[in-house]
Amino acid sequence: MTKDKKLLRTGAIGTAIAAICCFTPALVVLVGFAGLSAIVSWLDYGLFPMLFASMGMVAYALYLRSGRKGPSPTVIIVAAVVALSAILFWLEFRYALRISIAAAVAVAAYAYYLRACVRRQSSQSVDTTETAS
Image 1 (tube, rainbow, N blue to C red):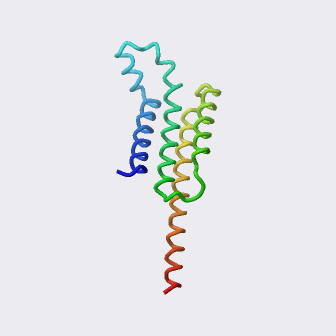
Image 2 (cartoon, helix red, strand yellow):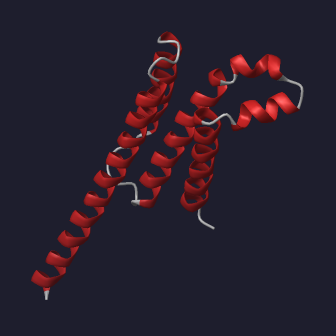
Image 3 (cartoon, rainbow, N blue to C red):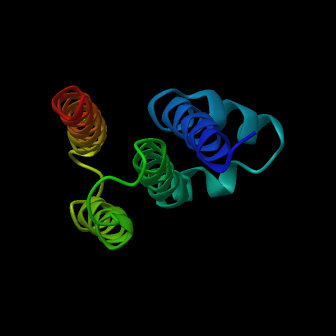
């Protein structure tokens, strides 16, 4: 399996797990059954950064799958993960759902942008081969 597929799968699974644990009481119930209910109030401090980091992993995997079109987004992804986590902590998780949806929309928009770059590149290569023959 190639690195981009493995990275994409890992990021998607991490995003799904973090989203389920953040937006449903599943993890709270499991932690309560385990007798660790004292840490329930601290779960969001780990889950939301995990959610944003997983979304960043998906964005980077999409970049790799696109054939590395454009500059590397690594610095921007790390800055976005840190900034979104810091904003959520600062706002005390008041707008957590809205910020998480905005992050997901940003990753989807980036995927659309990369797909458009790949299409544009492939259509340009088809045009150059037609003019050459």
